[in-house]
Image (cartoon, rainbow, N blue to C red):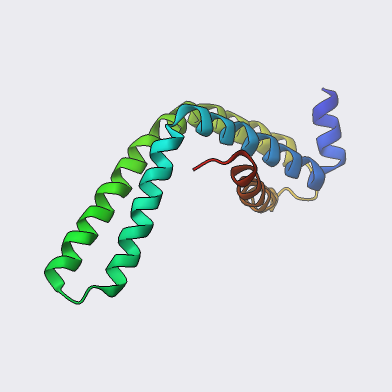
Length: 133
């Protein structure tokens, strides 16, 4: 129980470290469980279509481009489901455990905000560093 005692003694740093560790694992799972080449292609096509959409005047053509953008978005969503399903149960268990650890600390009512902030920042950093689409 040395980890739990350390987390209780250092709650702010502890929740940040937990968030960073969980985010790193989730980012790695996403990187290796998705087709990164296809995801990058889809993002590139979406960006092209959005630029094209800005310059189109015809409503029919706008509708067609919007439909294509939605198709790309749906394919990207399908690719992201696999890592999401793999990480869902472990994340729920970790949240349940973390809530139990930090309920007795000074950040008992705000630990989730520390977690969310740390997770967002570390996710941006890890996605850039690991080149995850």
